[in-house]
Image (cartoon, rainbow, N blue to C red; front, side):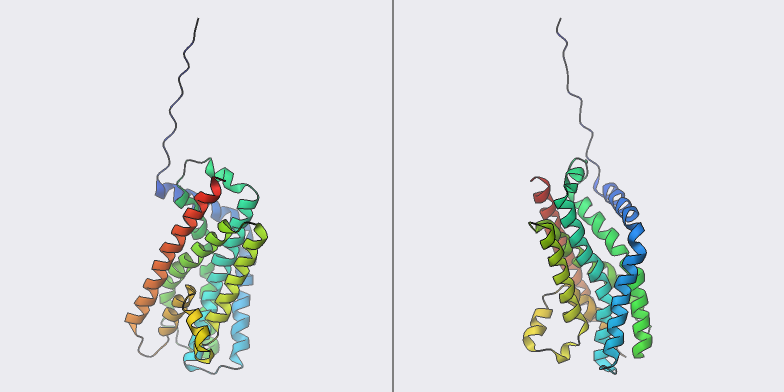
Length: 257
Protein backbone atom coordinates (compact mmCIF):
# COMPACT_ATOMS: atom_id res chain seq x y z
CA UNK A 1 0.00 0.00 0.00
CA UNK A 2 1.52 3.26 -1.09
CA UNK A 3 0.93 6.45 0.85
CA UNK A 4 1.17 9.66 -1.10
CA UNK A 5 3.12 12.42 0.60
CA UNK A 6 2.39 15.94 -0.43
CA UNK A 7 4.58 18.89 0.49
CA UNK A 8 2.89 21.55 2.53
CA UNK A 9 2.68 25.05 1.21
CA UNK A 10 5.29 27.43 2.52
CA UNK A 11 4.11 30.34 4.60
CA UNK A 12 3.98 33.61 2.70
CA UNK A 13 6.86 36.02 3.16
CA UNK A 14 6.28 38.78 5.65
CA UNK A 15 5.37 42.15 4.27
CA UNK A 16 8.07 44.79 4.29
CA UNK A 17 6.78 47.28 6.87
CA UNK A 18 5.59 44.74 9.49
CA UNK A 19 8.92 42.93 9.11
CA UNK A 20 10.79 46.22 9.44
CA UNK A 21 8.89 47.06 12.64
CA UNK A 22 9.58 43.60 14.09
CA UNK A 23 13.32 43.79 13.36
CA UNK A 24 13.46 47.34 14.75
CA UNK A 25 11.80 46.32 18.03
CA UNK A 26 14.02 43.26 18.35
CA UNK A 27 17.21 45.24 17.75
CA UNK A 28 16.05 47.99 20.11
CA UNK A 29 15.41 45.48 22.89
CA UNK A 30 18.74 43.78 22.25
CA UNK A 31 20.72 47.00 22.47
CA UNK A 32 18.76 48.47 25.37
CA UNK A 33 21.18 47.00 27.92
CA UNK A 34 24.07 48.90 26.34
CA UNK A 35 22.12 52.12 25.81
CA UNK A 36 23.46 54.13 28.75
CA UNK A 37 27.17 53.33 28.13
CA UNK A 38 26.79 54.06 24.40
CA UNK A 39 25.05 57.36 25.00
CA UNK A 40 27.57 58.36 27.66
CA UNK A 41 30.62 57.56 25.54
CA UNK A 42 29.28 59.21 22.37
CA UNK A 43 28.06 62.32 24.19
CA UNK A 44 31.09 62.67 26.47
CA UNK A 45 33.40 62.44 23.46
CA UNK A 46 31.59 65.21 21.57
CA UNK A 47 31.24 67.47 24.62
CA UNK A 48 34.95 67.01 25.39
CA UNK A 49 35.87 68.02 21.85
CA UNK A 50 33.79 71.20 22.11
CA UNK A 51 35.45 72.11 25.41
CA UNK A 52 38.89 71.67 23.82
CA UNK A 53 37.91 73.72 20.78
CA UNK A 54 36.54 76.50 22.99
CA UNK A 55 40.11 77.45 23.77
CA UNK A 56 40.91 78.24 20.13
CA UNK A 57 37.51 79.24 18.71
CA UNK A 58 35.69 82.31 19.98
CA UNK A 59 32.57 82.55 17.86
CA UNK A 60 31.22 83.22 14.39
CA UNK A 61 31.13 80.59 11.66
CA UNK A 62 33.88 78.55 13.31
CA UNK A 63 31.84 78.12 16.49
CA UNK A 64 28.83 77.07 14.44
CA UNK A 65 30.94 74.47 12.64
CA UNK A 66 32.30 73.06 15.91
CA UNK A 67 28.87 72.73 17.56
CA UNK A 68 27.20 71.29 14.46
CA UNK A 69 30.08 68.90 13.77
CA UNK A 70 30.23 67.68 17.37
CA UNK A 71 26.48 67.06 17.40
CA UNK A 72 26.54 65.01 14.19
CA UNK A 73 29.61 63.16 15.50
CA UNK A 74 27.32 61.46 18.03
CA UNK A 75 25.37 60.06 15.08
CA UNK A 76 28.57 58.94 13.35
CA UNK A 77 29.84 57.17 16.47
CA UNK A 78 26.75 54.98 16.76
CA UNK A 79 25.31 54.75 13.25
CA UNK A 80 28.59 54.31 11.39
CA UNK A 81 31.16 52.93 13.81
CA UNK A 82 29.06 50.62 15.99
CA UNK A 83 26.87 49.40 13.14
CA UNK A 84 29.93 48.45 11.08
CA UNK A 85 31.21 46.47 14.05
CA UNK A 86 27.81 44.85 14.63
CA UNK A 87 27.35 43.61 11.06
CA UNK A 88 31.00 42.53 10.89
CA UNK A 89 30.49 40.47 14.04
CA UNK A 90 27.16 39.14 12.77
CA UNK A 91 28.76 37.96 9.56
CA UNK A 92 31.81 36.44 11.23
CA UNK A 93 29.76 34.63 13.87
CA UNK A 94 27.20 33.16 11.49
CA UNK A 95 24.40 35.41 12.74
CA UNK A 96 23.33 36.16 9.18
CA UNK A 97 22.26 32.53 8.84
CA UNK A 98 19.56 33.15 11.45
CA UNK A 99 18.11 36.08 9.53
CA UNK A 100 18.42 34.18 6.24
CA UNK A 101 16.03 31.51 7.57
CA UNK A 102 13.36 34.05 8.45
CA UNK A 103 10.71 34.94 5.83
CA UNK A 104 11.57 38.64 5.96
CA UNK A 105 12.84 40.88 3.15
CA UNK A 106 16.59 41.62 3.36
CA UNK A 107 15.92 45.35 3.24
CA UNK A 108 13.84 45.14 6.43
CA UNK A 109 16.77 43.54 8.30
CA UNK A 110 19.21 46.25 7.23
CA UNK A 111 16.79 49.14 7.75
CA UNK A 112 15.53 47.78 11.07
CA UNK A 113 19.02 47.43 12.52
CA UNK A 114 20.09 50.81 11.13
CA UNK A 115 17.01 52.56 12.55
CA UNK A 116 17.47 50.94 15.97
CA UNK A 117 21.09 52.02 16.27
CA UNK A 118 20.33 55.51 14.95
CA UNK A 119 17.56 55.91 17.54
CA UNK A 120 20.15 55.85 20.33
CA UNK A 121 21.77 58.98 18.94
CA UNK A 122 18.80 61.29 19.52
CA UNK A 123 19.27 62.08 23.26
CA UNK A 124 23.04 62.42 22.96
CA UNK A 125 22.74 64.71 19.94
CA UNK A 126 20.27 66.99 21.72
CA UNK A 127 22.44 67.17 24.85
CA UNK A 128 25.56 67.90 22.79
CA UNK A 129 23.86 70.59 20.72
CA UNK A 130 22.32 72.28 23.75
CA UNK A 131 25.61 72.26 25.66
CA UNK A 132 27.44 73.63 22.62
CA UNK A 133 24.99 76.49 22.23
CA UNK A 134 25.51 77.49 25.86
CA UNK A 135 29.29 77.08 25.63
CA UNK A 136 29.69 79.19 22.49
CA UNK A 137 26.77 81.57 23.05
CA UNK A 138 24.78 80.41 20.02
CA UNK A 139 20.99 80.71 19.72
CA UNK A 140 18.92 77.60 20.45
CA UNK A 141 16.05 78.54 18.18
CA UNK A 142 17.37 76.36 15.36
CA UNK A 143 17.69 73.13 17.33
CA UNK A 144 14.41 71.93 15.83
CA UNK A 145 16.29 71.22 12.58
CA UNK A 146 17.86 68.24 14.37
CA UNK A 147 14.52 66.51 13.83
CA UNK A 148 15.50 66.32 10.16
CA UNK A 149 19.30 66.20 10.46
CA UNK A 150 19.45 63.18 12.81
CA UNK A 151 17.29 60.76 10.75
CA UNK A 152 18.72 61.83 7.38
CA UNK A 153 22.38 61.90 8.44
CA UNK A 154 21.71 58.78 10.50
CA UNK A 155 20.34 56.95 7.46
CA UNK A 156 23.34 57.92 5.34
CA UNK A 157 25.88 56.94 8.00
CA UNK A 158 24.03 53.80 9.10
CA UNK A 159 23.82 52.57 5.52
CA UNK A 160 27.54 53.23 5.11
CA UNK A 161 28.35 51.48 8.38
CA UNK A 162 26.22 48.44 7.53
CA UNK A 163 27.79 48.19 4.08
CA UNK A 164 31.31 48.37 5.54
CA UNK A 165 30.53 45.67 8.08
CA UNK A 166 28.94 43.35 5.51
CA UNK A 167 31.56 43.82 2.79
CA UNK A 168 34.62 43.51 5.01
CA UNK A 169 36.19 40.06 4.56
CA UNK A 170 37.08 39.83 8.28
CA UNK A 171 35.55 41.13 11.47
CA UNK A 172 38.73 43.00 12.37
CA UNK A 173 38.62 44.89 9.08
CA UNK A 174 34.98 45.83 9.69
CA UNK A 175 35.97 47.28 13.06
CA UNK A 176 38.88 49.14 11.49
CA UNK A 177 36.66 50.54 8.72
CA UNK A 178 34.13 51.76 11.27
CA UNK A 179 36.83 53.44 13.34
CA UNK A 180 38.34 55.13 10.29
CA UNK A 181 34.93 56.34 9.17
CA UNK A 182 34.21 57.86 12.56
CA UNK A 183 37.67 59.47 12.63
CA UNK A 184 36.96 61.02 9.23
CA UNK A 185 33.65 62.38 10.56
CA UNK A 186 35.54 63.80 13.54
CA UNK A 187 38.39 65.46 11.66
CA UNK A 188 36.41 66.66 8.65
CA UNK A 189 33.17 67.50 10.43
CA UNK A 190 34.23 69.20 13.66
CA UNK A 191 37.18 71.27 12.48
CA UNK A 192 36.15 74.56 10.84
CA UNK A 193 36.54 74.31 7.04
CA UNK A 194 37.98 77.84 6.89
CA UNK A 195 41.21 76.53 8.42
CA UNK A 196 41.59 73.52 6.13
CA UNK A 197 43.53 73.25 2.85
CA UNK A 198 41.48 73.04 -0.34
CA UNK A 199 42.31 69.36 -0.81
CA UNK A 200 40.88 68.54 2.62
CA UNK A 201 37.78 70.63 1.92
CA UNK A 202 37.16 68.65 -1.29
CA UNK A 203 37.57 65.41 0.63
CA UNK A 204 35.16 66.73 3.24
CA UNK A 205 32.48 67.11 0.57
CA UNK A 206 32.62 63.35 -0.08
CA UNK A 207 31.58 62.50 3.49
CA UNK A 208 27.77 62.22 3.84
CA UNK A 209 27.73 63.58 7.38
CA UNK A 210 29.22 66.85 6.10
CA UNK A 211 25.88 67.87 4.63
CA UNK A 212 24.10 67.25 7.92
CA UNK A 213 26.73 69.39 9.65
CA UNK A 214 26.32 72.18 7.10
CA UNK A 215 22.52 72.11 7.33
CA UNK A 216 22.63 72.39 11.12
CA UNK A 217 25.38 75.04 11.13
CA UNK A 218 23.46 77.29 8.73
CA UNK A 219 20.53 77.56 11.15
CA UNK A 220 22.72 79.44 13.65
CA UNK A 221 23.09 82.38 11.25
CA UNK A 222 20.97 85.49 11.93
CA UNK A 223 19.28 85.03 8.55
CA UNK A 224 19.61 81.35 7.58
CA UNK A 225 19.73 80.38 3.90
CA UNK A 226 16.89 77.86 3.98
CA UNK A 227 17.38 76.94 0.34
CA UNK A 228 20.91 75.80 1.13
CA UNK A 229 19.64 74.00 4.25
CA UNK A 230 17.07 72.07 2.21
CA UNK A 231 19.72 71.24 -0.40
CA UNK A 232 22.06 69.84 2.24
CA UNK A 233 19.24 67.79 3.77
CA UNK A 234 18.31 66.55 0.30
CA UNK A 235 21.88 65.37 -0.30
CA UNK A 236 21.80 63.54 3.05
CA UNK A 237 18.53 61.87 2.10
CA UNK A 238 19.77 60.85 -1.36
CA UNK A 239 23.00 59.41 0.06
CA UNK A 240 20.97 57.63 2.72
CA UNK A 241 18.81 55.89 0.11
CA UNK A 242 21.88 54.95 -1.92
CA UNK A 243 23.93 53.69 1.03
CA UNK A 244 21.04 51.64 2.43
CA UNK A 245 20.49 50.12 -1.01
CA UNK A 246 24.17 49.15 -1.15
CA UNK A 247 23.93 47.73 2.38
CA UNK A 248 20.90 45.66 1.37
CA UNK A 249 22.79 44.29 -1.63
CA UNK A 250 25.78 43.53 0.61
CA UNK A 251 23.46 41.72 3.04
CA UNK A 252 22.07 39.52 0.27
CA UNK A 253 25.61 38.81 -0.95
CA UNK A 254 26.87 37.89 2.52
CA UNK A 255 23.80 35.83 3.45
CA UNK A 256 24.09 33.41 0.52
CA UNK A 257 27.78 32.62 1.15
